[in-house]
Image (cartoon, rainbow, N blue to C red):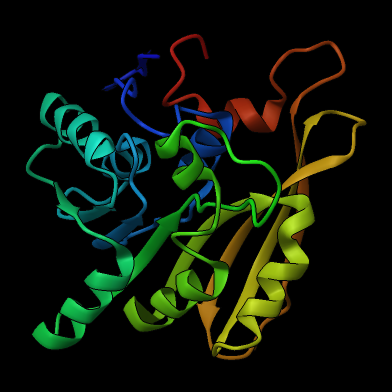
Amino acid sequence: MPFTFKQFHIDDSRCGMSVSTDGVLLGAWAALGEAKNILDIGAGSGLLSLMAAQRSHHAAKITAIELDSAAVDDCQANIGRSPWSAKVTLLHTSIQSYCLSFIQHTQAPFDHIICNPPYFTNGPQTQNIARATARHTDQLSFIELLSAITQLLHQQGTASLIIPYQSLPQFKQAMAQTPLHICEYVSVSSVEGKAQSRWLLAVKHGKAHKPIVNSQMHIRNKQGHYSAKMIDLCRDFYLKL
């Protein structure tokens, strides 16, 4: 269903995954800082790429990688209608194929990578093939994703991701096979006082040399309104904030 933000519009009618609070939260939270070479793995409708374009340095370039043909059509249209069509480049390929091309062409590494990855490893899959691909790890496992980040991320760069709370053990098990570490954790609950449902994670190369940052937030308070932290993160995007 189409979704209008303050500075851009998303039509996700052909995408496996529609615009979600997870995606908006990740796009608003990622510490882009002065990042000038940004990669969006699994761009879908282009939500994260356009949020990154809005938040990043004026000279930044965003590369969006998307495998699904229908999602590519939506993504390209959304980028073209945005104020940042010259800032975002969409590539219709898998991240695995892109990594091979990256090696062959000796490209510059990315100083920030952002990804809302597939996360279901088992259980029933929807009959909608595009949605199943977007939600399940069949096409992109955690180890494949982390291996790609290892290869593509600058040595001083950061990768920002969001995963389900219960997926953290599998994620960390995959990470143990790479030279990466988690430098920041944010546990997210949908409503104040309820159990956590998501992790926002910041990932870097090498072993941790600084204390790992841990925090928590809730999206809505007990009265059902957006929390102060959610408002602070998303006020530049949601129309009614």
